[in-house]
Length: 201
Image (cartoon, rainbow, N blue to C red; front, side, top):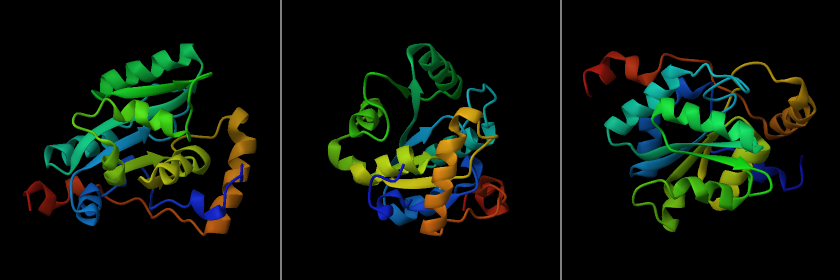
């Protein structure tokens, strides 16, 4: 898995899950509304599952309603055409655009895979990559891809168990995570449930 310098796998931020990301802090850090590319498996759903983490989707919607997110979408390495249909169905349920990366076309971490999703964002231009945030659970696809295109990234803890066909890859990822000293913060109450957030301050 490690084919690039170690630092190219380092995320901008880490989070315990999609529902626990404080998008307001990211908005303040970037100084302007940002675009969001969210991985599917282990982030929005469990691997090949259909059960959506609605708390995470609500988090994105609330941040969008407050003007912090300029556009958001789902990107997933579906691999083969039949699995890409699942990505589209879940994206429709979340009311988000999507790009399902399938072989033999571009897959994450290739730049073109991300650009295919960005083309769905209204008003998106190439310089906007600097205010784009990629959320994912894999250092070798999501985080590496974000770093290669010049985007920011959030590395999140995996939702659900790692399936047998990904375990060898996951063991290699754990080695990189350890070498980078990455830690996930403890899950906290989502920002939008705090009293000050509900009062609009």
